[in-house]
Length: 257
Image (cartoon, rainbow, N blue to C red):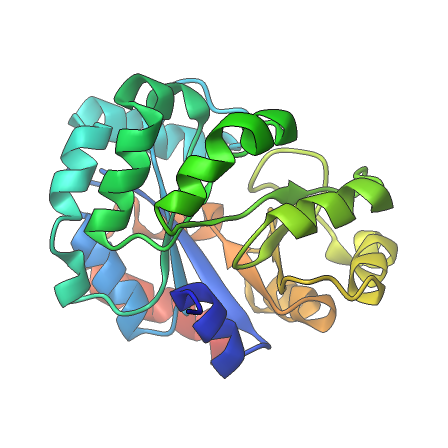
């Protein structure tokens, strides 16, 4: 049986928009409001960031949102409480993105089971090594019926890209440059890398992330890949928004309309 993410890419394999939001941000209970706004105004996929105090790949905007969420009191336990019945409202695929430390503290198998029970479709854990995925954690993820998405960068060898593609399900996350999220990046500088990925005829669809922040960068990413991931720009937009729904509409209209 095809996963929700697979079904999404069957229906739509171009200009797929994945939007990242931080759980517990801007307020402890903002998540469902944010998710409903994203679904209503054009996000094809929602990526929920699980706040962590020592992130590896997050730029200053997402780090600040995580710090604020942690100050607000978000935990994995409270996140799953918030997600308990989200599928009554949210129909687009939803993935959780975060780091191994909090997940291991929660209990990896318990985490996978609770994620699946809540209605989550997939996971991104950037600091989970291939070896540990294959030997220990991958079987638990698979048993829970969750897709797992690996990241590749411009420095990733072709052999390793093929390996990560083979191990991934749902899609492959193509990091646009070897730096943190957000910031000013010219995607055209990476055209050789994106062209290489496109020419490899990978098993999974490819979404480009890091530095996608407006219509121009979204369109550039979509020239080479099946779509793109927006995080920091959206987080910045809703940080002090008085009306998250209206702000989300204006933000997404500026990207995809």
